[in-house]
Each structure stands twice: as structure tokens, then as C-alpha cells.
Image 1 (cartoon, helix red, strand yellow):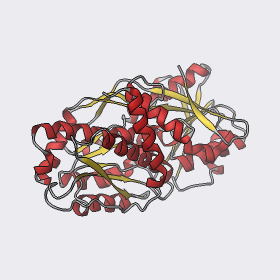
Image 2 (tube, helix red, strand yellow):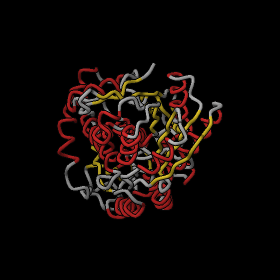
Image 3 (cartoon, one colour):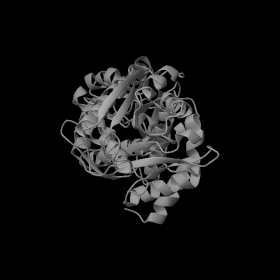
Length: 404
């Protein structure tokens, strides 16, 4: 590992390019379209995340992290001297967009592997396409139950909701041991949120609490007056929301406007600074469990964190750290594979197969800490966190403050 100062310089240079890179056309393609990697001086890795739709608040953070990783690892020498090239495709917010992005990356762009898609709902439709084509997929924000089980070529660096979500309920009880009655809200049209709410509701019952109401909504909704009013009539001590950033932020806002003063827990879809512009000052106090902490030890995280803050003047989002990590896994697996057999000489189908085996076998020191994979592709991660949103009085700026 190079010295921290050298790493910092590399990542600071990365950040300077990220905003312009992410605003470019999402259909940029790699030049390598042959059956092997020999005709290209770069190794193409697909990035299939949302740049448009209501899911863009999450997907854009993933693009930032991936672009940071691309520049950083290329500055460190790439794959033993050969650079990687990220091929970006916009999945939008639905299954059709994810399927189209995956098909383009696999068949036209000839990528060696894919990072994405943004939503678990999309993964259940798009990942089988990659699995049938024997193209590795690493989910960087897919936490629903059953993602790695989609197929042999599907893995994830995003820890499952079953591991992460219960931590926020325990943190709420620490803040208010008198909590007894819980109102639950979830987006019924999204596979991840349906999976997450099941975990939340089980955790609530395991803690001896009562679910007094369950309110459903759509990720495309903006008016939550009916659900919020119905929930408040049940006099809850705690509200738990499983949604995305835009709908979840609006629900937080409307609950507060209607007078709810208890603790609010947000699920993984609210785990983004982009929520601040939605509920503004009323975001204050929301608890969110996280799989990433800016304070996590490790040289790569210290450098990633410092460079991100220096450029954006805010803490890095979990989705950026996870996308960075997914690209890092591909890079380190490719480097290990290249030392055995030059990847530039391997037929593409064989490279994809061997890459999938190699990435599952490795251990990686990442911004998320040390991670590895089970044979089925599930991430093995040691540390998890809970944060609380703290907004300034104007409601313009906020941050996630990590609880001890």
C-alpha cells in the first residue's frame, strides 16, 4: 500500500473529475467489442445505476463512488499496467430500464462484469440475464433477501437488510426505553422495501413492542396525508419508514407537519444526504442504520473520506462507498487473475467465468472495512453503525452523526 499522502493526492484528483464525468451522457461505451480483450488497451467494467427517475437520488451517489474508484485505481497502475474503463448505463427506476442496461453492457459493450443495479426490485429482473450469460454482477445497493441466491454469477457488497436494519430499532429503544407502540410505513411496489419492512416488523415484535398500524404507499407518491393521519390516530411512540429518498423524505416531512414528535427510523432508502433537500429541517433526528462509517479505520477509508469531503464539503454517502468498493473488488480480482494468466489474452467468456471465481475467493480492505464473500456471493462484513440526521436551524445543511 502506498503512503497516505500519495493516496490522498490520487483521490483528490479523482474527485475533481467526478461531477463532470457523472453529468456526461450515460450511454458512453467502451471500445472493446471483440470476443477477447486483446484489441483494447482498457478493461471495460459495466456500471448500471439510476441517473434518472425518482431513484436517481440514490443512483447518482453510486456513480460518484464508481468514478472515484476508476480514477484512483488507474492512477495506481490499473490491472498490472492496463487501465480499467467504466461503461456507464442509466437503469432509470424500473425493471425495464435495468434489463435494457444489462443487455447493452453484456452484448454491445462486452464488459467483463457489472456493478448494479440500484434497486433490489430491478436486480430480481436484471441479474438473471447476467447470470444466464455468465457475466459477474456485484450489487452495490441491493440488500433485499435472496439477491445472491439469484445465481452463481451474482454477489453483493451491500450487506443484507436482515443484518443492518435491526440496529436502528435497538438504537431507538436506547434513546427512549418507554417506546411501546410502533407505526410502520412501507412502499408496497418495491421488493427491497417489502423485504425490509418484514425485518423491521419482526425486530419490533422480538423487542416486545406492538405494531399498531401498517401503512402502505408507492415510491412515486408525494401526498401521504392519509397514511400519516391514520397512523397518528393510533398514537405511536415510534415510526418506521421503508421507502426511497424522495417518497420517504416527504413522508417524514408530512408526519412532522401533522404534529408527530416521536422518533422516526428510516430504512436504507433514506440513507442518503439527498434526503436533506426533501424534508429539510424536519429531517432532524431521523435514525438510519448504516453499513458504512466515515470514521471506520483503515487507510483506504481515511483517504476516500478526506478526498470526498475536500471536494464536496460533506460526508461521503454509503452508496458512494459501496460503489467504490464494488469497483475495487473487480480491480483486485482482475489483478490477482492477471498474475496467473494475462487477462488481455483470455477469451471474454473465459475471463468472465474466471473473474467470478476469483472475486468470490478474495479478501478486500475497503472503505467498508475488511470484506469477503461466502461461496454463494453474500458479503461478509464485520462492522455496522447507526446514525442520526442533524440539520442546521435553516434546514439547508445536514449530516449523519454516528452514534456510539
